[in-house]
Length: 142
Length: 142
Picture 1 (cartoon, each protein chain N blue to C red):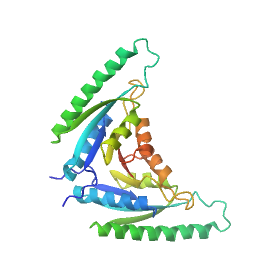
Picture 2: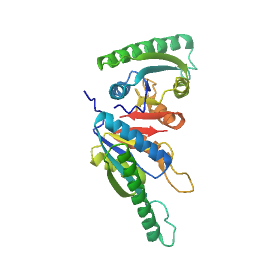
Picture 3: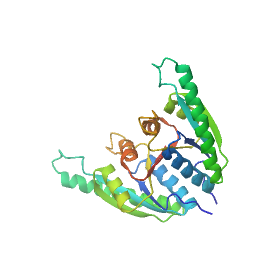
Picture 4: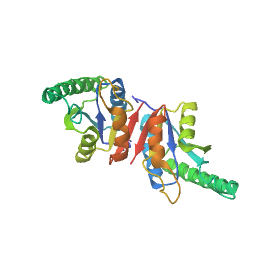
């Protein structure tokens, strides 16, 4: 008999190897627990405020996010899991907490680190932030 | 087929309802993934440094820890999981990280909050600390 603590799992994606590990862990949980999976990417609107062409910059991030989600869905499908994808814009941790609450997710899965300073992305601080503010459980994957 | 990301799970116990939820979540995972579970309580040796009879104080904490672990094992057994118990002394997060590394644990499960200031216990700050310093994945249960 399944003991499903997490009927709905939300996985945070940023295209880093850490977030790919997070997807793999989430898929293993989902397969064993019979959970559904959603993959989320948040375009960080708090960056690039000082850029001349901020609109174009955000568009580039948006396109990048769409690619990250496409690859994330492919990774999940390789693990035999059909996942939904979600692209949001705003403050990363806020958007994830909000989406998780609205969608009644019971678990957020996130990598312990992001792509690092050069790529301006984001999961290191986001994971700590989520652990503090999320209403549901958080799995930080190393 | 099982997809076991976590053959060995370490659950942090402090006797609070949050850590009891952590035990329940860990047991569900363990049953679905075929993992083994250890329950750990750490006597916080960083407290009571200014007490007149510190030795007695630590002994009281040790006895409390033994009771917490006994109850934790009972909770796990009610979920059909036979768990090992471990009592350590030292700095809480340090000891947990050290024990997890030595025992090659792949997942630490911890409650998002502890018993609160009155009881001097501990999981709120410990969970953040663990998320940063643990070598293995950390599940923070809400």
